[in-house]
Amino acid sequence: MSHLTRRGLVAASAALALARADAVLGLEIDRRAGLDPFALGVASGDPSLDGFVLWTRLSADGAPLDAPSVPVSYEVAEDAAFARIVRKGRRAASPSLAHAVHVEIAGLRPGRPYWYRFHALGAVSPVGRTATAPRQASRARIAATSCQHFELGWFTAYRDLVAAAPDLVVQLGDYIYENSYAQFPKVRAFDGPEPTDLEGYRRRHALYKSDPDLREAHRLLPWAVTWDDHEVENDYADLANLKALEEPVFARRRQAAYQAYFEHMPVRPSLWARPDAPRLYRRLAWGDLVGLPILDGRQYRSAQACNAPRQAGNRPRRDCVELDAPDRTMLGAAQETWLADGLKRETARWTLLAQQTPIAPIQTPEGVMSDQWDGYPAARRRLIGALTQPAVRNPVTLGGDIHAFLVADLHATPERPETPVVATELVTTCLAASHAPRARYGEARARNPHLRFADIERSGYLLLDAQPDRLEIDLRAVSDQADPNGKTASLARFVVEDRRPGVQSA
Ligand SMILES: [Fe+2]
Image 1 (cartoon, rainbow, N blue to C red):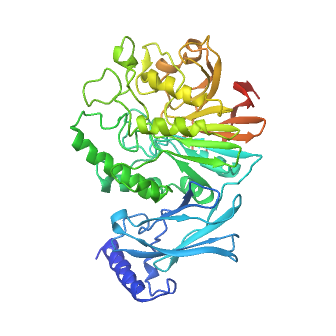
Image 2: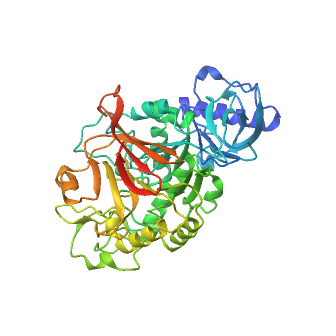
């Protein structure tokens, strides 16, 4: 009998035993098998004033659990020793969701840390730490990450991030990669082929959660995540895809990828009421200091301009008339309206707009790249319009995607540098991946004077420190992503001052 089959029987009988017994602990479980049901870790996310979402996924040492529905109990405490437990309850971990568990906690006190753990199959999970958002804040420290390719680099930047202990980690997409890049050196390999179905995407997500640095960052800090393209397939746009497959065919792949994403992320199940059309855009806040709208720039966007029908792909474009069509959209009409309406009522000192791709125009030797906001200029003008409503005191955009640090001034008319600077753009580099191509971006600053800083050689992340009178920005860079003991340090620092769009040197 294989290990896994045996494990499945153990789990199944345990589940039956639990269904009969009322107590969750003290099960007759064969622990000699030594398989850890919590090997994929624990996570929390989307903190609100009175709660957050807690996550885990039961597995057999990372492999799928071969078992029917398994009861899981959770505890939330005000202290790390669980002397003051303030919430507890039980959920069923169902095979239909890969034995993932999402618990939305509400009714807690604002602005304080909480600790949580799960019990299942006679085991106790690692203790996670999270927090509720404060009602008022004089400081908010937020880390922004994007683009983590499992094969191309170690995730050592998370050690520095965990040591920095920000209030929140914002992941801006490309959390997983579906594809390999044969032309770049690998530090480790995927454990299977490119995923195209639910089983494949689940396996890829589980592999990511085997990374101890990533797992620890989830355990110790609340996250707010959104996706970019590689969570499904490189460069996809709504249902346009790389192989120009018929829409219903690609829709099935996309839905599988979306489901696996939800199953593995600390995202509120209330956003996931429709599995075929999950809503990922939402707003978080850190007191009256930071408003954090989080966008979905993939699910609803028009296909990249001047491609064949159903054909996705990021291409350099010039003289592409379709690019300027006013009805082309990055966010879709509903999300665009939601964003503009929310920003009309913005009350936070700093608005950090979390989204995926660079917004500032970037001229390359071959033209502009069609997958970025450069490929959607009419939508970009509408975005800048929404961001510069009077209620938005300090608009700052966060992005990722191109595997380079960029700091940019955003102008009232983005393509016209003679118009006033109205917002600040911060693009984080890849946490670990291949870097932006030199031929395309090596001269980016010389060609694009509104880029105040560009680095296309380092991996790392952004560390932001929001205070009432200033936003401090630290670009944290890894010494060498191929070094499993790589060290992370400051590459550059900037400041945005209250009511003064654009960066100053720190
Ligand atoms: Fe990426």
